[in-house]
Amino acid sequence: MEQSIISSASISVLPDPIRKQERLAVFLALIAGYIDATGLIKWKTYVSFMSGNTTQLGAAFSTDKFGVIITSVTVIILFLLGVYAGTCLSLWKRIKNQILTFYIVSGILIFYTIIAYFYNINNISSIAIIGFSMGLMNTIVTSVGNQKVNTDFVTGTLNSLARNTAMLSMTKDKAKKEEYKSNAIRLLLLWIGFLSGAFIAPILLDYSGKWTFILPALSLLICGLLISKNNYKTHIMLQKNDVAPDFTLFATPDQKIKLSEFKGKNVILAFYPADWSPVCSDQMALYNETLKFFKQYDAELFGISVDSKWCHLAFSQSRNLHFPLLADFEAKGEIARKYGVYDEEEGECKRALFVINKDGIIEWSYLSPTAINPGADGILEALETLKTK
Image (tube, rainbow, N blue to C red; front, side, top):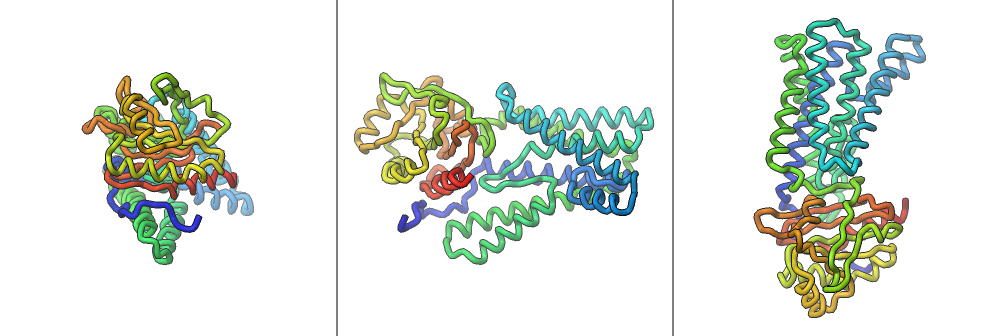
């Protein structure tokens, strides 16, 4: 392609859901730093920093420190089991959101604290329990916008921070500069959050004693309750590695399309606010022009809005579109809600993009400010990534 197919508008205006993800990620990094520092002080072992435990394990093998070997192996295995369990929960179709993970982690910490108050729990058991809970918590937020994050992996955070800073300094593309700048800032905040939690831990440990894990437990519990109360899932769009919810929607007045029937092909979903609006018209026209490039990646494109099938028919014919427009009309916005991209205040779909792989798993997602055409570059980059896998 001779020139980049992106919107000329700035992407510096972050949608509110991404800001919420940022705050949640920093909050979880703060909790992770606090618990990790507490584990290091109490048991001389990291309970979330697995790079440190791997280093200790390697050194212990060469120096025959059997106790360190047992401790390191235990926390690494239980942390991995926690990540495994949390990932399974997030992929389980019967679980509507990950609020349950907040409650499970909080419950584990509260249960451990109560038992430890009355009974003496040995270090290995303590490390195993807390390590497992940290692995679980690690799966609550895995990305912010298009930036993959890990709330308790400091090495990865600093690596990504340096990479985004380097790309920011080297690129001349204004849109890319804004993207790298946003990524670098949120990664820096993530690191500061972890560092702050580790800084607070020794201070509070002197006062809380055996109740030291009650503070993060109650914080997680309250956070989960607030998110649940505010119906947070309707504001946070599905992310990479989430299972794409199946649906059946009208593509024409007498024809329906079922997403699961397209397994074995890549699928692009373009949610947009409304037919006939200027930005939506330009966006759909752009995708009509780039359809041939999508086809090269064996990808099917579907536009989705809450307009009726008859409105879609008129709009599609007037714009001479060669891809289906699906009507998320009745119940209004039901599918947009499943994907976390329904605007409750406006009563319409948000401007969001999803690339779904041939197995029905979301490979890439992007939420654009309503007034900005997100273009096609992100879609093509995601499809190119799928091609190379």
